[in-house]
Image (cartoon, rainbow, N blue to C red; front, side, top):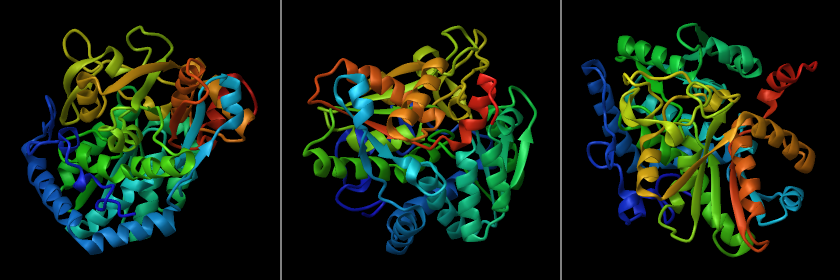
Amino acid sequence: MNVLQGKNSVESASPAMQQLPDGRGRFGDFGGRFVPETLTRALDELVAEYESAKKDPSFQAELDELLRSFVGRASPLYYAKRLTEAAGGAQIWFKREDLNHTGAHKINNTLGQGLLTLRMGKTRVIAETGAGQHGVASATACAHFGLPCVVYMGAEDVRRQKPNVFSMKLMGAEVRPVESGSRTLRDAVNEAMRDWMASVETTHYIIGSVIGPHPFPMMVRDFQSVIGREAREQSYHAFGRLPDKVVACVGGGSNAAGMFYPFVEDDGVELIGVEAGGLSADPGQHASPLSHGQPGVLHGSFSYVMQDGDGQTSPVHSVSAGLDYPGVGPEHSFWKDAGRVQYTECRDGAALETFDKVAKCEGILPALESSHAVAAALEIAAEMPKDKIVLVCLSGRGDKDAAEIARLRGEDY
């Protein structure tokens, strides 16, 4: 299946909700571009190159082949039979992004942006990462294309995601720990943005989620929409119809945007995004901007943001490094206000319990990010009839989280 064109593509979609963003990069009131003048030319260049690439059959063909032979797409749908029995209600199915090369959905985007880097003649790549999956995917793409790669990662995330840090280094990437602020994903993005402003003539910044200034939210969504397009087609083969509910975790929101986008015009399919509920609803104890935040500007885009009474970005917390972010993609903000996607939260404890449950019931180690989505799906399925179907985006595998989970439990690893 073609990634950016074809019968299931975003290019062939006619309904209004699938035509966003507009020419200014706006999803309704959200999105846009709030950046220093230094970056304006680079972003204009990226818009032009991306629009050109979407119309170029050779770009399409190379990306399709990489996704097939290098990543291992299409990722399968999987019926979680024992988990379904434990829930006692609707059928629970997984879209198995954890089976991709590098262990998560992030590689779908980094390969696309890596090809764009070459088309633009840039000679260096930078990236940010939280849980390390985007860092690994960026390092992987750069090793494949022969590009030097620098990955910014909060020092706290370096500590709790050591396996991914080592993998990045093995593939030749330089990992730069960020010691400022909360030493997590927000601070890694800050440092990557500073680097990009100083090196924009030779450097492309591969943003890992549907955040940042236009065209990143649109572009990353499009590259990740292969998840939802495959899932729609596979649903008809697996159970003869579309699922009743589709569930995905939401930090910045790339796996959820890629999963939801091909379903947004399917009125009979309920879409549910699951944010990091952390320890409690108290400020600084969670990372749920769609549930508790207010519209504001963060990292070049207008979206829902966790902020204090003075409009300053607030501290956030999640046991999951990949969800530990105070903002969210602007399209998610649009979907929230439009009522198309329902957003909820999952606490740290429930995510950790679900990690164990999926491992013991299905023999799958889900990423802690994905565990948030599965935890919500279990609650949702329990309240539904047995002939209904809940499809979950299993966005990544949890090998990277095992050492941190052992530390939290006081166990040896």
